[in-house]
Image (cartoon, one colour):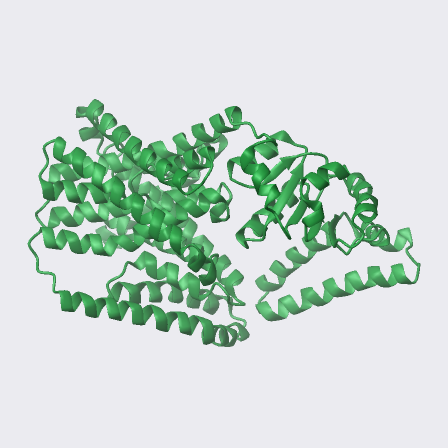
Amino acid sequence: MDGTGSQYLMDILALLLATVIVVPVFHAIRLGAILGYLTAGAILGPWVLGIITEVEETRHLAEFGVIFLLFILGIELKPDKLWQMRKLVIGLGSGQLLITAGILYVASVWLGLSHHDAIIIGFGLALSSTAFCLNLLAERGGIASTMGKMSFSILLLQDLAVVPLLALISMLAGGEVNAAESGINLLYAITAITILLLIGRYLLNPILGKIAASQDPEVFIAVAVLLVLGVAWIMKSVGLSMALGAFLAGLMLAESHYRHQIEADILPFRGILLGLFFMTVGMGIDFGLLSNNLANIIGLTFGLMTIKATVIYTLVRLNGVRHDIAIQTAVLLIQSGEFGFVMFGFATSSGILDPQINQLLTVIIALSMVFTPFLVKITNALLLKFHKPKTTDNYYDEFIDHSQDHVILAGYGRVGARIGAILNAAEVPYIAIDMDQKRIKAARAQGFPVFYGDACNVKVLRSAGADRAKMIVISLDNPKNIDRMIPLMRQYYPDMPIHARATDRQHCADLISQGVSTTVSETLEVSLRLTEQVLLGSGVNTEDAEKVINEFRNDYYQDVVQKMTENKVVMGELKH
């Protein structure tokens, strides 16, 4: 192996070693993986141990982490859902970008920079980090929450703005921008997106079905990676970013039968490369520059974050969002992001931005990323402590008063919270009831309609709009409370569909005998999900695995109903 190959191997070993040592430590002390990756990168970078000195080369590889991240996001967001968010994307997203960039432009001119520098700095620092925000958001309910929708709308608009902003830098550098050529490129981009979406809707499933029929997992993984990188490359070829191309690839698969398997195949690539991306941010911190100008850089960083947080908080509040959720959204998007590195690097190579200013801006962006997880953690802790949920809160009273044909969710533990998140993602209105104050605080902090009360009390059910509800889902943790609640519901709401959680087959039979519409056995569903993964891992294609699982599930519940009909519910027969 030559010297270059040996050096690459040493770099890879160092990155892996730092990951397995530093990241678990940060998990153990509850600071999160992102800060662990940042710290590991700073340690390995040129300013501490100096093991890795070619940061830019590493960063190019790490950008694939952002690509895979946006692919996963696209696959979880159906096109019709994206269309429903268009007003937020255009209104909130463009408002944040333009207002923040304008304020930063004025501040830059006031600090003595040229107008061209100020324009580039204003837009570059106004962009937040998609990788950081989506990773932090995934730990807090994803884009299904109100905070998630607000944040994603802003991030998506920023990603869309990157290519026009790079064109703006070319204009400022004195390059010619041909209007006709730009129009043709735009037409190419729209045509490519339309064709790809049509392929995804009508051709992708049959193609993937043929590949899955070969029962070769390696080929299926290769096709998944090819799809992500191929669409990303096509988008780059027509003038858009690779990240947006990956997002489009995800949208193509959002309604595919094979989306779950593809998502599972891509997740390892996303995790490793995204971790590498965060490490390159840590490597990019110039500790020499930081130590020589510590007070000024810290001041500029917090000034930047204050401006961004103020603008985002104000705009989110103007969209009718509660105070606490607006604060969380502002803090989540408080940093500048990876596209700032791209813009400032391009501006420097184009001769507009001074290299020393570029280095300073790189440190400021990196520091804003470092501070973000801490600020998010502190903000959430303060909100949980001081922002107590009140059932008399006007916002929630109005929510209940206007609720119609909603779902009542009795119990908001692990099962109930997951049901609520999915209902929220599907935009199915619901009202949840729980007795645990900590759960309620955490749910309210994410914008979920969870209320304090005993779901076994008919007055509480009425206050939750049971008279106008479409159905009730009982997901209480205690089986005795579930048994108490069924007769109550059947007495006061005899025609309402009731879907209940059951512990096992015996409990399913008991609940059906009391008048429950449908029951779901915990033991059955866990075993079926595990079996499904075993089948897929054994080479069984997705359709066949789903068919076997569904047949077994149907037989299971038909057996319960049959035994109820024949009055042959025997304890020994119905134990699992």
